[in-house]
Length: 262
Length: 262
Image: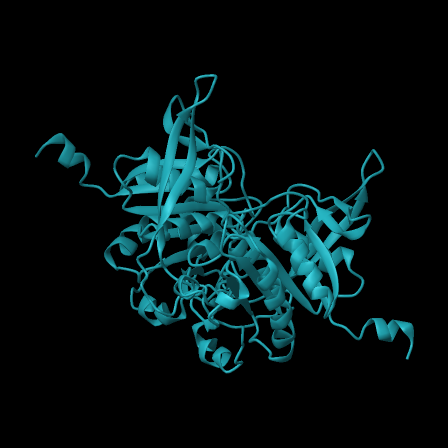
């Protein structure tokens, strides 16, 4: 067996995130996936949270080699998570990835937040490119322990590779921030429909100009047992199948009855 | 009847876009909707295309009154289209909007482009807030004539207000850039699944550093008669019902068969 064939015996996983290439959640994911795969990291050079599915079209992208602990760790891109997947696939990687894993995000990506999530957008982009993908997030903003989430990602990756997801579908995984012994299992869930009570703090800057800052809290008005947030509250890992076909197919016939003329 | 009641007899429509408050498509929409509604414009202070469903959380937002032809036209926000809808609803408008209309976008928002579209994200945000919404785009990048698209938006708005769309659903409208006489009618469509053959031009800057620029062309591999792009090719107005529940409900049971343990 040639060296080249041998080196290809493991799957090739592209890892990215939206917290940036410095983020500890990214490193935890890189370490755990490296046990089962050849891992390439292509991640934003700084935090790109809540960027939605933004891509950079009006500006050039720059790519920098990034070192960690004295050796090459990955590529830092001055773009969004979706940019990272695109540029990795089309420009940086000679060997195309067999899988895209995005995370581990610092903070949950559940319910309506999925729409705003850069982490999830990277998995969407992988899926658009026809690559099996998942996003993984840790549901906390403090005292993060990525240990179990990283271990779970390395367990899930081969399952996603062997069980084929339908075209256009990927998995959005959220892991409670508790020790492994307190995890109560895995739930297959739907995206919850709880919405936010947003508010804007109106403030005045030192030069006496007004500015606004977004704040807000989630209103738990989706009480379903089967939602992502519902699973998290029970200390279960939540796995939601997400697709990017946004058509509400169920209403197409009704809409034709509107008889809209030109 | 008091003056106040009289002034409320028309619906209140919030108009935004992603091309920015200077864009002629926005003004065309403002003018035509003003005949049937009280219109408030809250739009980005500069172009925010391909921003996806980004929102601004790590920076303050600033709002400026914007004049056109010597009188107040609307509010310019240093944020994304989704920011504009959010800040209008939660901070700027005393009278909540009865409808959100986003556009008229310069360029089509069909197929996979819907995922990247700032124009569409504004209608998504309106829908999340429970407001009937639609996005409207003109399918050209040159010689734009917004006349018919603007007229059609003013015809569609009362239909959307009187026929109720299901919760979480809005309309994505694309109008061919041809004279009204050449428009062949209106088609209810689904989001096409054609994807892009993306490429990155690798170039060298004057300081000898590499940079990459995204380019690419659509590969028409969704031949369906019922797609948005299919309708446009027939010179028909395309109307696609879009929802933001991203769960692939059809695969939930199959996924449970994977028996994923913690």
